[in-house]
Image 1 (tube, one colour):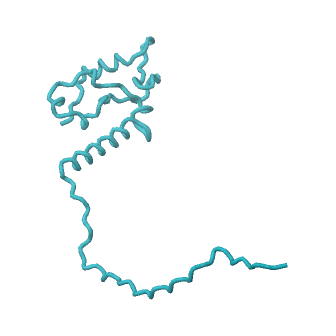
Image 2: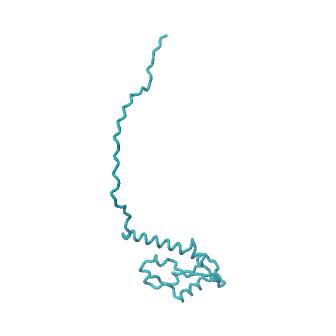
Amino acid sequence: MRREFTRNQREQIVERSKNELGQICCERCKLVLGGKPFEIDHIIPEALRPEADKQWKITIAEGQLLGKCCHRGKDGKTNRDVTAIAKSKRQYDRANGLKQPKQSIPGRGFAKRSKPDRPLKPALPAAQLYAPIQETRR
């Protein structure tokens, strides 16, 4: 169950994100948004929260105002959240035995190839390390 911010909480988060001049800023990169679109997002994704946390009412401390600069896009918070949620689901499934290991395809297979009998190599004669010394008389 995803907990959503109430209208009053969203207004408080917007007020919190304003700078000294009263301009709405992205809470992550401090970019002045002006009339640009923004989103109120959970700091910790709801899918990664334990069930015990979801029983309590959500507070404004759990939310942040993000512009499209930090929220969407290839390096945005949403993509990182989706990746983290998918990884946690895979780990949960593996830890609880919900994902069956891949099995090999049943079949009779191929007959094992026997190695041909190799003839033994003849032993090499012992090599002489030194040539015999020949005596010469003078």
